[in-house]
Length: 447
Image 1 (tube, one colour):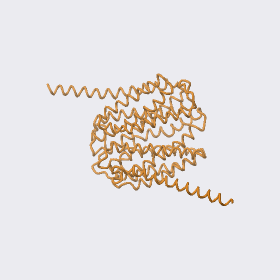
Image 2: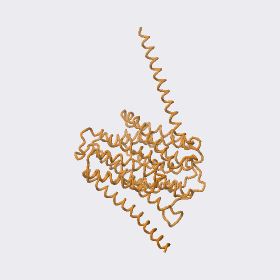
Image 3: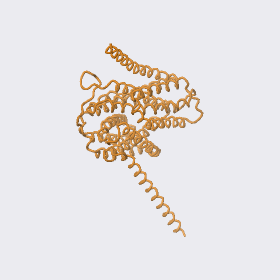
Protein backbone atom coordinates (compact mmCIF):
# COMPACT_ATOMS: atom_id res chain seq x y z
CA UNK A 1 0.00 0.00 0.00
CA UNK A 2 2.84 2.41 0.82
CA UNK A 3 4.61 1.76 -2.46
CA UNK A 4 1.73 3.14 -4.52
CA UNK A 5 1.70 6.65 -2.94
CA UNK A 6 5.48 6.81 -3.27
CA UNK A 7 5.19 5.89 -6.92
CA UNK A 8 2.58 8.61 -7.44
CA UNK A 9 4.79 11.12 -5.64
CA UNK A 10 7.74 10.25 -7.84
CA UNK A 11 5.56 10.59 -10.92
CA UNK A 12 4.33 13.99 -9.82
CA UNK A 13 7.90 15.10 -9.14
CA UNK A 14 9.01 13.95 -12.59
CA UNK A 15 6.14 15.80 -14.25
CA UNK A 16 6.86 18.94 -12.26
CA UNK A 17 10.53 18.74 -13.23
CA UNK A 18 9.59 18.31 -16.87
CA UNK A 19 7.32 21.36 -16.72
CA UNK A 20 10.03 23.47 -15.10
CA UNK A 21 12.55 22.33 -17.72
CA UNK A 22 10.09 23.11 -20.52
CA UNK A 23 9.45 26.55 -19.04
CA UNK A 24 13.18 27.18 -18.82
CA UNK A 25 13.71 26.16 -22.43
CA UNK A 26 10.84 28.40 -23.53
CA UNK A 27 12.29 31.34 -21.56
CA UNK A 28 15.74 30.82 -23.11
CA UNK A 29 14.21 30.56 -26.58
CA UNK A 30 12.24 33.76 -26.03
CA UNK A 31 15.33 35.58 -24.79
CA UNK A 32 17.30 34.44 -27.83
CA UNK A 33 14.56 35.65 -30.17
CA UNK A 34 14.71 39.07 -28.50
CA UNK A 35 18.51 39.36 -28.61
CA UNK A 36 18.72 38.18 -32.22
CA UNK A 37 15.77 40.15 -33.63
CA UNK A 38 16.20 42.85 -36.26
CA UNK A 39 19.36 41.38 -37.73
CA UNK A 40 21.21 41.41 -34.37
CA UNK A 41 21.93 37.69 -34.63
CA UNK A 42 23.66 38.02 -37.98
CA UNK A 43 25.58 41.21 -37.17
CA UNK A 44 26.99 40.03 -33.85
CA UNK A 45 24.97 42.44 -31.68
CA UNK A 46 22.94 39.54 -30.28
CA UNK A 47 26.02 38.10 -28.58
CA UNK A 48 26.76 41.47 -27.00
CA UNK A 49 23.20 41.54 -25.65
CA UNK A 50 23.58 38.06 -24.14
CA UNK A 51 26.95 38.97 -22.65
CA UNK A 52 25.56 42.23 -21.24
CA UNK A 53 22.69 40.36 -19.61
CA UNK A 54 25.22 38.22 -17.74
CA UNK A 55 27.24 41.32 -16.84
CA UNK A 56 24.28 43.08 -15.24
CA UNK A 57 23.14 39.85 -13.58
CA UNK A 58 26.57 39.50 -11.96
CA UNK A 59 26.68 43.16 -10.94
CA UNK A 60 23.25 42.81 -9.36
CA UNK A 61 24.50 39.84 -7.32
CA UNK A 62 27.53 41.85 -6.16
CA UNK A 63 25.30 44.79 -5.22
CA UNK A 64 23.03 42.51 -3.19
CA UNK A 65 26.00 40.98 -1.39
CA UNK A 66 27.67 44.30 -0.59
CA UNK A 67 24.37 45.86 0.48
CA UNK A 68 23.79 43.00 2.90
CA UNK A 69 27.33 43.23 4.25
CA UNK A 70 27.61 47.01 4.55
CA UNK A 71 24.02 48.25 4.97
CA UNK A 72 21.43 45.88 6.31
CA UNK A 73 23.21 43.54 8.71
CA UNK A 74 24.54 46.29 11.01
CA UNK A 75 23.05 49.33 12.80
CA UNK A 76 22.80 52.57 10.83
CA UNK A 77 25.58 54.31 12.78
CA UNK A 78 27.99 51.45 12.17
CA UNK A 79 26.85 51.11 8.56
CA UNK A 80 27.62 54.76 7.82
CA UNK A 81 31.15 54.29 9.09
CA UNK A 82 31.62 51.13 7.05
CA UNK A 83 30.32 52.74 3.87
CA UNK A 84 32.42 55.85 4.46
CA UNK A 85 35.47 53.59 4.76
CA UNK A 86 34.34 51.66 1.69
CA UNK A 87 34.04 54.87 -0.33
CA UNK A 88 37.38 56.18 0.91
CA UNK A 89 39.24 52.96 0.13
CA UNK A 90 37.49 52.14 -3.15
CA UNK A 91 35.80 55.14 -4.75
CA UNK A 92 38.49 57.73 -4.01
CA UNK A 93 41.18 55.66 -5.77
CA UNK A 94 38.67 55.03 -8.54
CA UNK A 95 38.15 58.79 -8.90
CA UNK A 96 41.86 59.02 -9.70
CA UNK A 97 41.88 55.99 -12.01
CA UNK A 98 38.63 56.71 -13.90
CA UNK A 99 40.00 59.46 -16.21
CA UNK A 100 42.75 57.06 -17.28
CA UNK A 101 40.42 54.21 -18.24
CA UNK A 102 39.42 55.63 -21.63
CA UNK A 103 42.97 56.36 -22.85
CA UNK A 104 44.18 53.01 -21.50
CA UNK A 105 41.41 51.11 -23.30
CA UNK A 106 42.30 52.98 -26.51
CA UNK A 107 45.61 51.08 -26.52
CA UNK A 108 43.70 47.79 -26.86
CA UNK A 109 41.22 48.78 -29.57
CA UNK A 110 42.42 45.91 -31.76
CA UNK A 111 41.74 43.38 -28.98
CA UNK A 112 38.40 44.51 -27.58
CA UNK A 113 37.04 40.98 -27.16
CA UNK A 114 39.90 40.10 -24.84
CA UNK A 115 39.65 43.47 -23.09
CA UNK A 116 35.94 42.95 -22.41
CA UNK A 117 36.57 39.35 -21.37
CA UNK A 118 39.28 40.52 -18.98
CA UNK A 119 36.92 42.94 -17.24
CA UNK A 120 34.46 40.08 -16.67
CA UNK A 121 37.16 37.60 -15.63
CA UNK A 122 38.64 40.05 -13.11
CA UNK A 123 35.23 40.53 -11.51
CA UNK A 124 34.73 36.78 -11.37
CA UNK A 125 38.06 36.36 -9.59
CA UNK A 126 37.27 39.25 -7.24
CA UNK A 127 33.89 37.71 -6.38
CA UNK A 128 35.65 34.52 -5.31
CA UNK A 129 38.08 36.58 -3.20
CA UNK A 130 35.19 38.62 -1.75
CA UNK A 131 33.34 35.46 -0.78
CA UNK A 132 36.28 34.43 1.43
CA UNK A 133 36.97 38.00 2.61
CA UNK A 134 33.36 38.49 3.78
CA UNK A 135 33.58 35.33 5.87
CA UNK A 136 37.01 36.20 7.31
CA UNK A 137 36.40 40.00 7.53
CA UNK A 138 39.86 40.59 6.03
CA UNK A 139 41.30 43.73 4.46
CA UNK A 140 41.23 42.00 1.07
CA UNK A 141 37.53 42.88 0.98
CA UNK A 142 38.27 46.50 0.06
CA UNK A 143 40.95 45.65 -2.48
CA UNK A 144 38.67 43.18 -4.25
CA UNK A 145 35.78 45.68 -4.14
CA UNK A 146 37.98 48.36 -5.72
CA UNK A 147 39.01 45.99 -8.52
CA UNK A 148 35.34 45.08 -9.07
CA UNK A 149 34.46 48.75 -9.38
CA UNK A 150 37.31 49.55 -11.77
CA UNK A 151 36.68 46.50 -13.97
CA UNK A 152 32.93 47.24 -14.05
CA UNK A 153 33.54 50.76 -15.33
CA UNK A 154 36.17 49.49 -17.76
CA UNK A 155 33.56 47.05 -19.08
CA UNK A 156 31.14 49.92 -19.71
CA UNK A 157 33.81 51.79 -21.67
CA UNK A 158 34.90 48.82 -23.79
CA UNK A 159 31.35 47.67 -24.46
CA UNK A 160 30.31 51.19 -25.54
CA UNK A 161 33.24 51.24 -27.96
CA UNK A 162 32.39 47.79 -29.36
CA UNK A 163 28.69 48.24 -30.11
CA UNK A 164 29.07 50.53 -33.17
CA UNK A 165 31.19 47.85 -34.89
CA UNK A 166 28.36 45.27 -34.95
CA UNK A 167 25.29 47.38 -35.69
CA UNK A 168 22.75 45.77 -38.04
CA UNK A 169 22.12 47.74 -41.22
CA UNK A 170 18.56 48.66 -40.24
CA UNK A 171 19.24 49.48 -36.57
CA UNK A 172 20.48 52.86 -35.33
CA UNK A 173 22.97 53.15 -32.51
CA UNK A 174 20.35 54.78 -30.28
CA UNK A 175 17.95 51.86 -30.71
CA UNK A 176 20.78 49.37 -30.15
CA UNK A 177 21.77 51.09 -26.90
CA UNK A 178 18.12 51.17 -25.84
CA UNK A 179 17.87 47.43 -26.42
CA UNK A 180 21.09 46.86 -24.46
CA UNK A 181 19.80 48.97 -21.57
CA UNK A 182 16.46 47.15 -21.54
CA UNK A 183 18.20 43.77 -21.62
CA UNK A 184 20.38 44.74 -18.67
CA UNK A 185 17.39 45.99 -16.68
CA UNK A 186 15.47 42.74 -17.07
CA UNK A 187 18.56 40.61 -16.40
CA UNK A 188 19.23 42.49 -13.16
CA UNK A 189 15.58 42.15 -12.16
CA UNK A 190 15.77 38.39 -12.65
CA UNK A 191 19.16 37.97 -11.00
CA UNK A 192 18.55 40.06 -7.88
CA UNK A 193 15.92 37.72 -6.33
CA UNK A 194 18.22 34.74 -6.91
CA UNK A 195 21.09 36.59 -5.22
CA UNK A 196 18.83 37.66 -2.33
CA UNK A 197 17.76 34.06 -1.78
CA UNK A 198 21.36 32.86 -1.77
CA UNK A 199 22.45 35.76 0.48
CA UNK A 200 19.85 34.60 3.01
CA UNK A 201 21.93 31.43 3.37
CA UNK A 202 25.14 33.46 3.60
CA UNK A 203 26.73 36.44 1.79
CA UNK A 204 29.42 34.21 0.29
CA UNK A 205 26.80 32.18 -1.59
CA UNK A 206 25.56 35.13 -3.65
CA UNK A 207 29.16 36.08 -4.43
CA UNK A 208 29.97 32.58 -5.65
CA UNK A 209 26.83 32.75 -7.78
CA UNK A 210 28.21 35.99 -9.27
CA UNK A 211 31.51 34.20 -9.90
CA UNK A 212 29.75 31.58 -12.03
CA UNK A 213 27.82 34.26 -13.94
CA UNK A 214 31.00 36.21 -14.76
CA UNK A 215 32.83 33.06 -15.88
CA UNK A 216 30.07 32.35 -18.40
CA UNK A 217 30.13 36.01 -19.45
CA UNK A 218 33.89 35.83 -20.01
CA UNK A 219 33.43 32.92 -22.40
CA UNK A 220 30.74 34.82 -24.33
CA UNK A 221 32.98 37.92 -24.51
CA UNK A 222 35.82 35.97 -26.09
CA UNK A 223 33.36 34.45 -28.59
CA UNK A 224 32.06 37.85 -29.75
CA UNK A 225 32.08 38.62 -33.44
CA UNK A 226 35.64 39.39 -34.67
CA UNK A 227 34.37 42.69 -36.09
CA UNK A 228 34.38 43.98 -32.50
CA UNK A 229 38.19 44.16 -32.80
CA UNK A 230 38.10 46.21 -36.00
CA UNK A 231 39.76 49.64 -35.81
CA UNK A 232 39.38 50.60 -39.45
CA UNK A 233 39.27 54.39 -39.79
CA UNK A 234 39.31 55.09 -36.04
CA UNK A 235 41.18 57.99 -34.46
CA UNK A 236 41.31 59.04 -30.79
CA UNK A 237 38.74 61.68 -29.90
CA UNK A 238 39.62 64.80 -27.93
CA UNK A 239 37.43 67.59 -26.59
CA UNK A 240 40.29 70.11 -26.41
CA UNK A 241 40.92 72.07 -29.62
CA UNK A 242 44.70 72.00 -29.10
CA UNK A 243 45.22 68.76 -31.01
CA UNK A 244 43.32 66.08 -32.85
CA UNK A 245 39.73 66.29 -34.03
CA UNK A 246 37.49 68.81 -32.30
CA UNK A 247 34.23 67.35 -30.99
CA UNK A 248 31.17 69.49 -31.90
CA UNK A 249 30.10 71.83 -29.12
CA UNK A 250 26.55 70.48 -29.26
CA UNK A 251 27.89 67.08 -28.19
CA UNK A 252 29.89 68.72 -25.41
CA UNK A 253 26.67 70.38 -24.20
CA UNK A 254 24.89 67.02 -24.16
CA UNK A 255 27.81 65.47 -22.29
CA UNK A 256 27.78 68.24 -19.69
CA UNK A 257 24.05 67.75 -19.20
CA UNK A 258 24.62 64.03 -18.66
CA UNK A 259 27.35 64.78 -16.13
CA UNK A 260 24.73 66.59 -14.05
CA UNK A 261 22.24 63.75 -14.45
CA UNK A 262 24.78 61.06 -13.53
CA UNK A 263 26.06 63.04 -10.54
CA UNK A 264 22.53 63.27 -9.20
CA UNK A 265 22.04 59.56 -9.76
CA UNK A 266 25.11 58.73 -7.68
CA UNK A 267 24.04 61.12 -4.94
CA UNK A 268 20.52 59.70 -4.67
CA UNK A 269 21.73 56.09 -4.78
CA UNK A 270 24.04 56.53 -1.78
CA UNK A 271 22.16 59.15 0.22
CA UNK A 272 18.72 57.57 -0.08
CA UNK A 273 20.09 54.10 0.71
CA UNK A 274 21.01 55.36 4.18
CA UNK A 275 18.20 57.82 4.75
CA UNK A 276 15.45 55.34 3.92
CA UNK A 277 16.79 52.69 6.28
CA UNK A 278 15.17 54.68 9.07
CA UNK A 279 12.89 57.24 7.37
CA UNK A 280 12.94 60.57 9.25
CA UNK A 281 9.73 62.03 10.62
CA UNK A 282 9.88 64.80 8.01
CA UNK A 283 8.89 62.28 5.33
CA UNK A 284 5.71 61.36 7.25
CA UNK A 285 6.01 57.72 6.18
CA UNK A 286 3.51 55.54 8.11
CA UNK A 287 4.74 52.08 7.10
CA UNK A 288 7.86 49.90 7.35
CA UNK A 289 11.12 51.34 6.05
CA UNK A 290 11.74 48.44 3.67
CA UNK A 291 8.46 49.16 1.86
CA UNK A 292 9.36 52.82 1.26
CA UNK A 293 12.81 51.85 -0.02
CA UNK A 294 11.17 49.31 -2.32
CA UNK A 295 8.76 51.95 -3.65
CA UNK A 296 11.59 54.37 -4.43
CA UNK A 297 13.72 51.68 -6.11
CA UNK A 298 10.71 50.40 -8.05
CA UNK A 299 9.82 53.92 -9.19
CA UNK A 300 13.37 54.49 -10.40
CA UNK A 301 13.28 51.21 -12.30
CA UNK A 302 9.95 52.07 -13.91
CA UNK A 303 11.26 55.50 -14.87
CA UNK A 304 14.29 53.89 -16.45
CA UNK A 305 12.16 51.49 -18.49
CA UNK A 306 9.85 54.30 -19.66
CA UNK A 307 12.89 56.36 -20.56
CA UNK A 308 14.33 53.53 -22.63
CA UNK A 309 10.99 53.11 -24.40
CA UNK A 310 10.78 56.82 -25.21
CA UNK A 311 14.50 57.46 -25.66
CA UNK A 312 14.60 56.46 -29.31
CA UNK A 313 12.00 59.17 -29.96
CA UNK A 314 14.61 61.75 -28.93
CA UNK A 315 16.75 60.99 -31.96
CA UNK A 316 14.22 62.53 -34.35
CA UNK A 317 13.06 65.36 -32.07
CA UNK A 318 16.04 67.62 -31.31
CA UNK A 319 18.01 65.39 -28.90
CA UNK A 320 20.19 68.34 -27.84
CA UNK A 321 17.21 70.26 -26.48
CA UNK A 322 15.71 67.15 -24.91
CA UNK A 323 18.94 66.29 -23.05
CA UNK A 324 19.20 69.81 -21.60
CA UNK A 325 15.47 69.79 -20.79
CA UNK A 326 15.62 66.55 -18.79
CA UNK A 327 18.54 67.98 -16.79
CA UNK A 328 16.33 70.89 -15.71
CA UNK A 329 13.41 68.54 -15.05
CA UNK A 330 15.64 66.36 -12.86
CA UNK A 331 17.02 69.34 -10.93
CA UNK A 332 13.52 70.78 -10.58
CA UNK A 333 12.22 67.52 -9.11
CA UNK A 334 15.07 67.50 -6.59
CA UNK A 335 14.34 71.12 -5.61
CA UNK A 336 10.62 70.39 -5.16
CA UNK A 337 11.45 67.37 -3.00
CA UNK A 338 13.74 69.53 -0.86
CA UNK A 339 10.93 72.07 -0.37
CA UNK A 340 8.11 69.60 0.38
CA UNK A 341 9.95 66.64 1.91
CA UNK A 342 6.90 64.32 1.82
CA UNK A 343 7.32 60.62 1.04
CA UNK A 344 5.12 60.59 -2.13
CA UNK A 345 7.36 63.34 -3.51
CA UNK A 346 10.43 61.22 -2.73
CA UNK A 347 8.91 58.31 -4.67
CA UNK A 348 8.13 60.67 -7.57
CA UNK A 349 11.74 61.89 -7.43
CA UNK A 350 12.92 58.31 -7.96
CA UNK A 351 10.64 58.01 -10.99
CA UNK A 352 11.83 61.30 -12.50
CA UNK A 353 15.50 60.53 -11.81
CA UNK A 354 15.32 57.12 -13.48
CA UNK A 355 13.47 58.55 -16.47
CA UNK A 356 15.76 61.57 -16.88
CA UNK A 357 18.99 59.61 -16.69
CA UNK A 358 17.75 57.08 -19.25
CA UNK A 359 16.50 59.69 -21.72
CA UNK A 360 19.59 61.84 -21.21
CA UNK A 361 22.00 58.99 -21.94
CA UNK A 362 20.12 57.86 -25.03
CA UNK A 363 19.98 61.48 -26.20
CA UNK A 364 23.75 61.76 -25.78
CA UNK A 365 24.19 58.57 -27.80
CA UNK A 366 22.03 60.10 -30.53
CA UNK A 367 24.12 63.29 -30.53
CA UNK A 368 27.36 61.34 -30.85
CA UNK A 369 25.94 59.26 -33.67
CA UNK A 370 24.57 62.26 -35.56
CA UNK A 371 27.34 64.82 -35.09
CA UNK A 372 30.62 62.95 -34.47
CA UNK A 373 32.46 61.62 -37.50
CA UNK A 374 32.83 57.87 -37.80
CA UNK A 375 36.62 58.08 -37.43
CA UNK A 376 36.40 59.28 -33.82
CA UNK A 377 32.92 58.08 -32.83
CA UNK A 378 34.05 54.90 -31.09
CA UNK A 379 36.72 56.69 -29.07
CA UNK A 380 34.23 59.40 -28.11
CA UNK A 381 31.83 56.79 -26.73
CA UNK A 382 34.63 55.31 -24.62
CA UNK A 383 35.80 58.61 -23.17
CA UNK A 384 32.30 59.93 -22.47
CA UNK A 385 31.42 56.75 -20.59
CA UNK A 386 34.51 57.09 -18.39
CA UNK A 387 33.59 60.70 -17.58
CA UNK A 388 30.00 59.76 -16.68
CA UNK A 389 31.18 56.98 -14.40
CA UNK A 390 33.43 59.45 -12.60
CA UNK A 391 30.46 61.82 -12.20
CA UNK A 392 28.49 59.04 -10.48
CA UNK A 393 31.34 58.48 -8.04
CA UNK A 394 31.50 62.19 -7.17
CA UNK A 395 27.74 62.25 -6.56
CA UNK A 396 28.05 59.23 -4.28
CA UNK A 397 30.78 60.98 -2.28
CA UNK A 398 28.50 63.99 -1.80
CA UNK A 399 25.74 61.66 -0.59
CA UNK A 400 27.81 59.88 2.05
CA UNK A 401 29.34 63.18 3.15
CA UNK A 402 25.98 64.88 3.79
CA UNK A 403 24.61 61.80 5.55
CA UNK A 404 27.59 61.39 7.86
CA UNK A 405 27.27 65.08 8.83
CA UNK A 406 23.71 64.23 9.99
CA UNK A 407 22.30 67.05 7.90
CA UNK A 408 18.46 67.17 7.85
CA UNK A 409 16.99 65.52 4.77
CA UNK A 410 15.42 68.62 3.28
CA UNK A 411 18.57 70.66 3.86
CA UNK A 412 20.76 67.94 2.28
CA UNK A 413 18.53 67.76 -0.77
CA UNK A 414 18.43 71.55 -0.94
CA UNK A 415 22.22 71.88 -0.80
CA UNK A 416 22.72 69.36 -3.58
CA UNK A 417 19.88 70.91 -5.60
CA UNK A 418 21.67 74.27 -5.36
CA UNK A 419 24.86 72.67 -6.70
CA UNK A 420 23.01 71.12 -9.63
CA UNK A 421 21.10 74.33 -10.32
CA UNK A 422 24.43 76.11 -10.64
CA UNK A 423 25.69 73.39 -12.99
CA UNK A 424 22.52 73.52 -15.11
CA UNK A 425 22.82 77.32 -15.28
CA UNK A 426 26.42 76.94 -16.46
CA UNK A 427 25.37 74.49 -19.20
CA UNK A 428 22.58 76.80 -20.37
CA UNK A 429 24.79 79.90 -20.26
CA UNK A 430 27.37 78.27 -22.52
CA UNK A 431 24.66 77.36 -25.02
CA UNK A 432 23.14 80.86 -25.00
CA UNK A 433 26.56 82.53 -25.28
CA UNK A 434 27.42 80.58 -28.42
CA UNK A 435 23.98 81.24 -29.87
CA UNK A 436 24.38 84.98 -29.27
CA UNK A 437 27.84 84.95 -30.86
CA UNK A 438 26.46 83.06 -33.86
CA UNK A 439 23.62 85.54 -34.30
CA UNK A 440 26.03 88.48 -34.17
CA UNK A 441 28.28 86.85 -36.75
CA UNK A 442 25.29 86.18 -38.99
CA UNK A 443 24.13 89.81 -38.69
CA UNK A 444 27.62 91.08 -39.53
CA UNK A 445 27.77 88.87 -42.62
CA UNK A 446 24.39 90.13 -43.82
CA UNK A 447 25.52 93.74 -43.42
